[in-house]
Image (cartoon, rainbow, N blue to C red; front, side):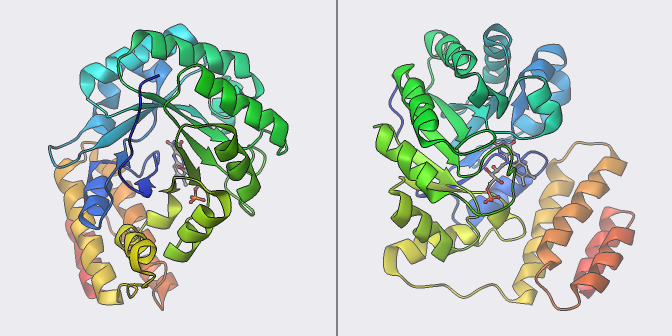
Length: 318
Ligand SMILES: Cc1cc2nc3c(=O)[nH]c(=O)nc-3n(C[C@H](O)[C@H](O)[C@H](O)COP(=O)(O)O)c2cc1C
């Protein structure tokens, strides 16, 4: 097994369609020390690598970085991982056994792998035998229900196959992104293995990050929706864990300044077609205005903006 040392308590999660270069840079400026690329689909990578270039875009300051692969077949996943490593140099490669999307589990990838631990093991073995970087796995705590014994067994099998760390979303496939996070599931996995375990699920504030760490004993947390429109969360978690002090929430003015900065990075780095690009930008701007008074009326203004300049004008006015 290749050892992996993760030098932070709060990692930016892989977020399809969100954790692109511009978002990672914004999060890093606000204290994120380790970020994930967006997840890469093994089939897409082997068949049409060029389409994926945008998601692997990076810069020298965008380090350290981890990559994640979504696959159902050991050979295809290895071939895709090799392509991915030609495109970029991550610190480690994560296998996605957590994605709940119907189109993904239908193809027997993502969270489906929890139902077929033997296939998950075969994918891990293929990657650990053939690649020189550390391999990690992102799991959920169950498929339809949480079963402590079953998930502990899967975690131990991952460790046995040489996995260097586990990222655990404390919800089942059935619960997707809703409902309470089952801390016991993360705790059970942490107690079953010796490798680092990072917990995921509703890390929306420094207090919730500490709660997860305290109640599960996990080595760190993974921040996902909690960072969307809220990159300050990384500094605020770090400070809270260090000194118990809660840094103030950003003011509306600071939020809108950050929104503009984020959009300007998207304008600079995102390569998608203009119509797609403005769609992504509007989506990002909406995360920043969510917590403002009058959010509904601002939302209308944002969604009607037809170009980058128009959107920047709307954000300025807000
Ligand atoms: C828009 C979006 C995209 C996501 N993309 C990925 C992904 O590519 N890979 C992954 O492992 N998890 C992905 N997730 C799941 C998150 O990483 C995280 O585990 C989950 O949202 C639970 O954390 P939260 O409750 O703090 O959001 C995604 C979640 C969202 C909301």
